[in-house]
Image 1: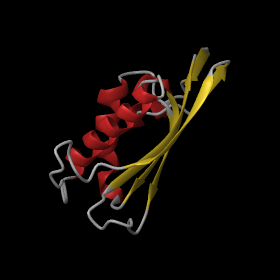
Image 2: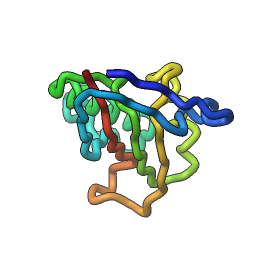
Image 3: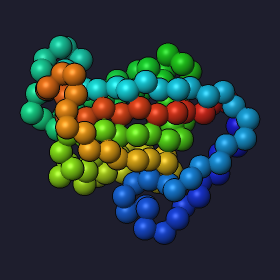
Length: 128
């Protein structure tokens, strides 16, 4: 599968690409994932940073089952309850993806079904 990143200009500082072109491959549609509990079931209520890392770990586990990895994500939609957390989410996403960032949108919501949730991420991955 061929993947070409449209880099844009300012988008790199926000850890996303304005577009990604793929040719060939299988598409994995990633449902909304959250991280309000850690792997042992302990609540992460109120800890935004911990929820972001746990959300990406949960997505990574799902992608592994599908034969993919985080690096295969071509687009994601991030839902946040507090727009002030957008910058920290961007920093963590920069750490996780390093340079080849997925296309992305960040949307502020008034809340989730579980009031302890602070973030939800859905996306699309393309694999060979």
